Length: 495
Ligand SMILES: *Cc1c(COP(=O)(O)O)cnc(C)c1O
Image 1: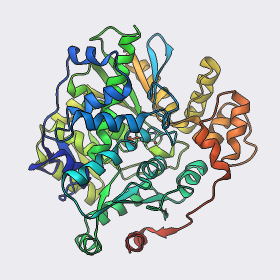
Image 2: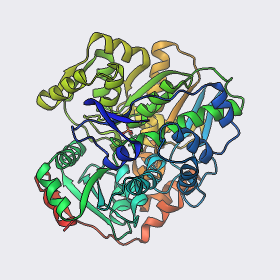
Image 3: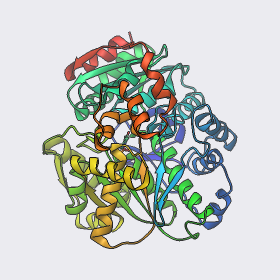
Image 4: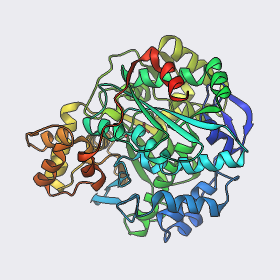
């Protein structure tokens, strides 16, 4: 199967090239030319399988230039017991008869980004081999907190790769920052940007499309690629867990084969929920996709009105990985809903760059609204939801997951839809100890990692061991830059 660009539907490149490039030269997102279809027979075959084997089977449908044997080996490495503290990898926890929670944070950095970023470095290394690439790839990452750490953990000391992460200086949690600045590996670099996530992401995108920069780096033996969810190699591993969750529910008798399920996803860059959309497009029985935002509610308005307008205040919230006003992956959805026509997509993206706003056609809006439902959850409701789940279910959830849980309730109240619904849990509560402690009525007694012990003794819920180990680690990086200085940081990192 070939890949094309959301801004050029005549392009044809292989999966390995798409993963190696990360972003298309025309600025568009690389996307499969067809969506492979699955049926009940396929799902039945997956039912008894382990997560690792389900992963290889699903990825194989999209990656013709990778053998099943290769993909199986990658999945064993990515999701093995040395990386994941749950043998199920992505376990589904039942809350009540029609509500389940898909826990995606059992990997090495305790955020759902690991699900893809334990896989992507292996797909990318193989892509370098398959395409005969001799240069070293430098992965540039803009992170709202979790991607940076998960990407460094995945790429640390991978041959023929370097990785440089930019994060918003005051936009990540103390634990997220400590996870990043203590990262080991000879090929990693970290730099804070004075600004918010959109500033960091815009800076990275600008560097990608800078021809002079590309030439300079080529002269030094490097090319740039992306581990952000603009890379198809990030989205594909995320499709797996929606299909796997469905299989688990059927296997465990919580759902009959063929019955529909809704997914409610805490959303920032629109990568995770886009993967759910692809699962649905492949034929997984999915009802509604519920898009949950925090008070950066640009997507809620978009899904309700068809107008995307980023001209609004930016809020730093207790769910920082969703503090985003420009959701990059929406471009893939718009392309698909426009019948894979690149012309309207290019027009929308020009308007977005020029005025920060665009309005989709009536036809696209109707399709959007039949598939998706959008809602947002403010700070107080987020805290109240953490408290409620802890009190009613002794279930400790993080701030991002709480946004999803609360928006799921809003959806149910607004529509009366009683379809079985899975809300997605994207981070361990131990990444956001201060907010979680306050939410359950405890007074945080210190800061940062010191709070892990307090949350553990207050709740009896065990902390992920990797987070607990952060305490004694040495800080290796302390660099920061203004947003205009990001080019210079890249040049000195690759000197
Ligand atoms: C990245 C992230 C999200 C948002 O996911 P997108 O794919 O960017 O929409 C939600 N929650 C957590 C904890 C994250 O790290």
